[in-house]
Length: 263
Image (cartoon, rainbow, N blue to C red; front, side, top):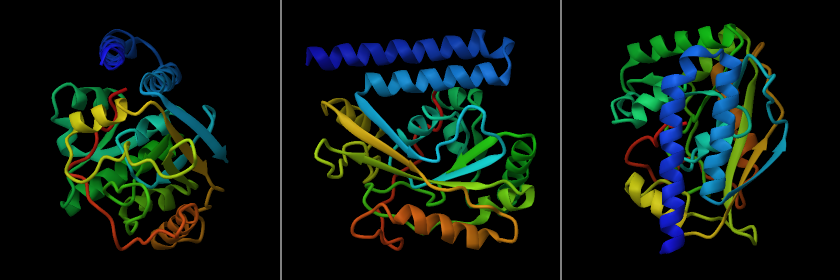
């Protein structure tokens, strides 16, 4: 209990540091400096939560530009795994923007918000993502649209891949896995089955150690492809890391988006 309390205190202090950084540093530094701060903050968060990160494949670097990352979705931790490799502009549900503190932090980190279920808002967001890509930025979203227990995939939605097609930006598939020391699936990190964020956080902190793996595949060129072809190609390579192969037709849904970018 004492160890858990100490880790929680470290987490609170890191969160307060993040708030102070957004208020005092972000307004006066350039984008490159903000990305480095987000990168460092995300790595410190993973360390506090005893998440051991392993990255393989064609990982983006801090010098990567004009790239769209698509990944399977397991946990609110997914965002920090990817930001610990290379900070990205994530897409999140609009209701997260209205969450106390978390929504503000997400906006400060450059999260792009969408009112899901409103076709017109999808058009607006697609244009915004396209602008980010054409300006040389890197974006990311989870095309399943929800989380799973980490052992399967849902069908990949295609609409937000259109900006990559229009801007001719490569799509970089990434598979995210949470494992035990012996390589078996660890579901403690999964944010699903109607649990609250607080319950999810406590479940993660009660586990001595979680091994997280991010596997990057070869970028998929968008020239000559439509968004459905891109979604199928990305889903196929991401599904290849699961054994048995993931079934995109089945999954357990989460009650809401994780806190999309409280970095």
